[in-house]
Length: 319
Image (cartoon, rainbow, N blue to C red; front, side, top):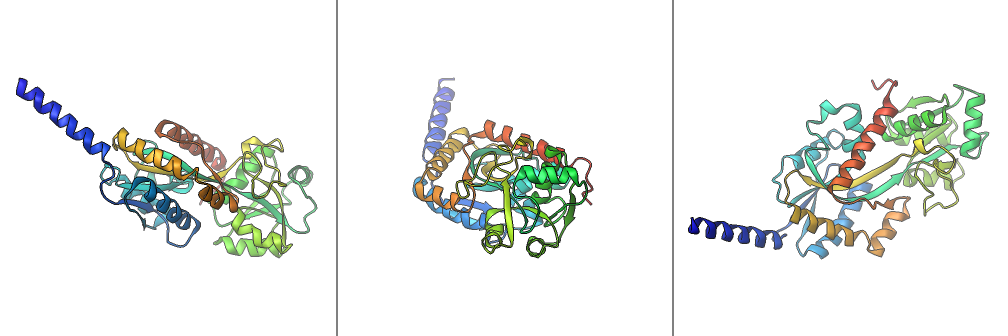
């Protein structure tokens, strides 16, 4: 019995030492989208900074496919040792979980451990340059006086931009027709030309058109004004908090990663996300740093987002 106790004690000490030494080899940071986009570029900046904090290489790998589902699934089945992390986002973790959960082949709420929120990206509600309204309230008043006359475009049915529009319609109690496109660039061109009336999209997408005077910003779907555009009111400020809608990213790991290792990753990301250069990079294009961290807070946040998107999709044709 004494030998068994000594052996168990030695094993526990060895296990504790192994956890204390994490990481001892490179970490793979999976981006479930193609290289070159905002998510990829942001990941590489964050991974480079996290590498400096942890003292081991953090290697970004792009695993695109099926709107982020392929890379997400690969991380879900990876070894729960902390050496594979996922840059999760509101598409495969929120929107698709709400609209078509059976398609995922994973459960965002039970198959992963949440480490730290990273970015929040509110949409901008933009209108054609000659629209007869210049603010959110003027838009609501016009839409209520002219039901069914206005429309908004999106890159397609079930996209974040589409659901952003549906959330606004629901919150404001207005009838605005959805016009789905096959790409975001096409609907932006049509909005700039006055073919459609409105769109919900992100700062880097709409900024060139706004600067050229081809469309105007009515508000942001964030809970507060953007630091990049402090003159633009938020939907919450205008009296429509149920229209708040942000695209978000969160660092997660497979279920079963030991708490000690999760804490090291969380502490590392906390330092990364308080670095002034990282904060400046994130805020420059209309995003903000997420303050949510840890598994329980992350899980509760994502659960609320899934429910919100279910409400937005209720009663609309997603085919």
